[in-house]
Image (cartoon, rainbow, N blue to C red; front, top):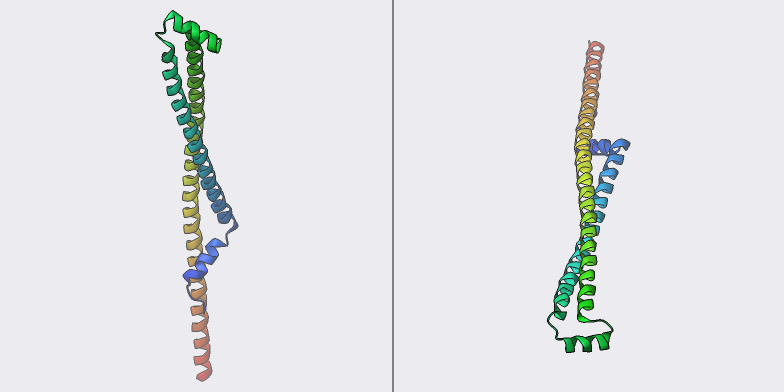
Length: 167
């Protein structure tokens, strides 16, 4: 006579190929989220480095202000640029760094959007998995219940036959 077993029910549920594929897809989505988060962290680190560099450049931009004409001539003789040229170069560098930071921000926004999509997809898959598991469990319970009922019916029939033979 068949009996109900939670272990067998789990085996029945886990043996479903569609459920297995869905679980694998959900796990792949989680791995993708992890990879995207790692990429976002790297972008944040780069953006932070650009910010620090921009702050240093801003400091340097103003370090050539207020030189006398004599000091300016010495700077030009040593470096080939006057203090105004140096200020312009540092200012241009600050602009390039700002553009780089803005570009990094766009990349981060794209990564955040992809993470959000993956989270939504994995949540949808999780809900589908839960529904499939519940459906398969119900199917297993129904199947076992029917088998138990059939076994009880057969046993009653055997008892009746036995009683007829005994009489």
